Length: 236
Ligand code: ADP
Image 1 (tube, rainbow, N blue to C red):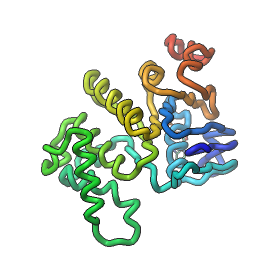
Image 2 (cartoon, rainbow, N blue to C red; image 1 turned 180 degrees about the vertical axis):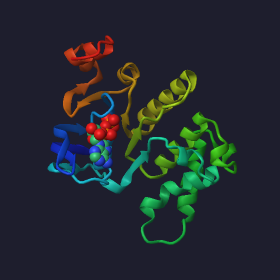
Image 3 (cartoon, rainbow, N blue to C red; image 1 turned 135 degrees about the vertical axis):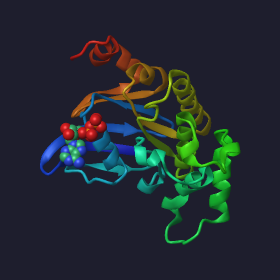
């Protein structure tokens, strides 16, 4: 059974369809990269996977123990998030908000989780620091710890390496791969970086309104679409 199954999904804005007839599945332990040019519908699809935007047609099914509010989400960075005036610990702990339900306070278990995830990502020493004073790479680790507090099953990362230098980017990709392999958490990553997507992911969804390609990263490398984009040509 799939964690997420998209069946003939179309999504749009005020009658204008921007994602059309999309079919793909994410299984436990998969590492799926969603690639595609600007405006190809990646963010729109992410919104629907998170339940923030309803689909026009088709359906998105959640299974294998995954509930929609149990996706660990690392949003695209915006300037307002970068300046968030809270401590690292508070940002990480806020990952527990979704599963907190109507309880007004964080539980001891919530707090324990936050410390565990900070340990896992090597940021315990930063706990009392202000989020906005951190480097770009440190901020992404904090937001990753926050996302991990919200899930045991699936991480959804939207362009997580934007603005990071090449070394920090490589470290971040390796960290994601380690989490995916060692914790068995499925990863869905929206990315511009097709070369790295093929290197790290198990599966590729190449979006251009609909799925130009969906399959394993190996199959993608040998596909017409993959060869064209990996070869650096502009058009299929
Ligand atoms: P990507 O994330 O791949 O860059 P988007 O999902 O942001 O693509 O956009 C897909 C299409 O939907 C684009 O043509 C974009 O202009 C349009 N779009 C995105 N957000 C909105 C919105 N809030 N209202 C109307 N159109 C939108």
